[in-house]
Image (tube, rainbow, N blue to C red; front, side):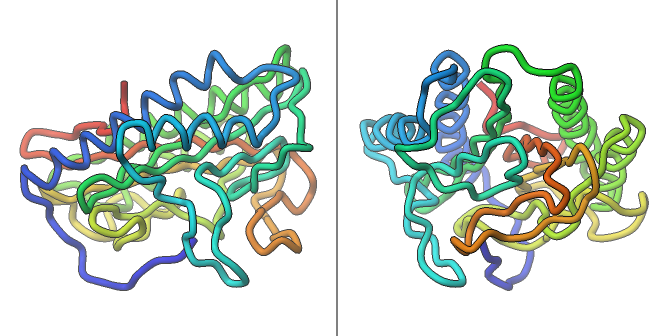
Amino acid sequence: MFFKKQAIEQKTAKEIEKMRIAGKVVGEILENLSEIIKPGVTTKYIDEFSEKYIKKLKMTPAFLGVPGARYPFPASACVSINNEVVHGIPNASRVLKSGDIVSVDLGVFYEGYYGDAARTYAVGSISDTAANLLKITELSLQKGIEKALPGNRLGDVSNAVQVVVENGGFSVVRDFVGHGIGRNLHEEPQIPNYGKAGIGVKLLPGMVLAIEPMVNEGSFEVCMLDDGWTVVTKDGSLSAHFEHTVAITENGYEILTKV
């Protein structure tokens, strides 16, 4: 998915409230999916559940129809299995089995504003390595968010993610990054999950960031499948993805997609 180049916006309290409403729905869906995702479920069912939930609330799926290099994204949820990093296309013939890990990335559009989050789930019983990958990736998101404070630099967030991931023995994807979010799904600034602390854009109240570590079991290198959307690890190793939409406040941060 692609960025619209623009200045970094600071949102008003009213704008953040709309994003909070959108984000709450994203968080609710991801929480509900923890009960739904199990062996035998198709990736298409995950997409259908998510889309119905969003439309029932008179909101709009943010990802459906997003322009791509070859064709618009054809679903409401990105569902990526095992070595798929991001942007997996749901399919009725793809059935989850015990031992898989599956990442679900979701967005909601509400009254002109977006919410965006992702989570990776264990399907049945998974390997110790896979379980550790999920644990470290989620921890790296948490530590990155903890640096999303007014007066800090964007590099503080990026570095916090990288340190946790690499100390855990895994690698940070470098070709895809987090992003600002608001009236557009993807806004400036771009947020790498690696880098030096103390450098980059100064974080200010009103900025809203989609922080999203994508972490590989093996090499950080990735490639795209022929469908023009699905990104996979180049070495075939597992990949995990966690994301929250986070508002910078006067006193700290607020996770807008947390239930």
